Image (cartoon, rainbow, N blue to C red; front, top):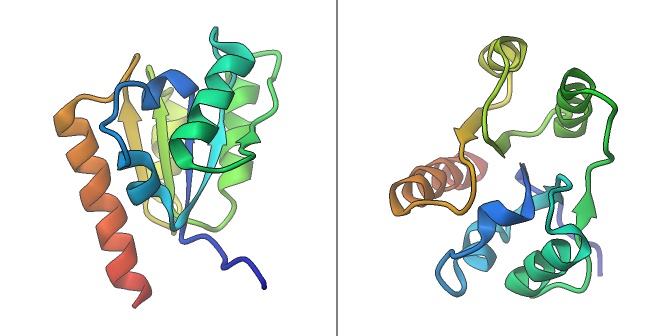
Length: 134
C-alpha cells in the first residue's frame, strides 16, 4: 500500500519534542514528514522521537560545517512543501526565504521543549494546512 505524500515537513532537534503531552506528536505530525537535526542527545534523542511518533524510523538532516550551510540544507529539504521549522534562532536570510517562498512556512524559535502556547501555534498552523488540502 503506497504511503500518502506528506502535507508538510517538520524540522527540529529531538529536544524540541521532549515534554510534549503523550500522543501530541503523533496527532500533530501524522500528515507531515518529520526530519531531525542533530543535537547533544545523539541517537537516544532520535530514538525518543521515534517512540513518541510510534514509528520504527525517522529521518535525520545531515550535519553541515557551518550554520549557513545547515540552513541551506534545511531549506533544500523543505522543497515545495509547507514547513514547520523549530530552532533556537533564525538568521535574516532564513527569515527572508521563509517570507518570500510560496509554500506556507512557520519558523518557531525554541530552545528546549515546546511551551503550551507554542504547541497551540503549531496546532493552528497544521490545522490550516489540513483545511487547505481538503
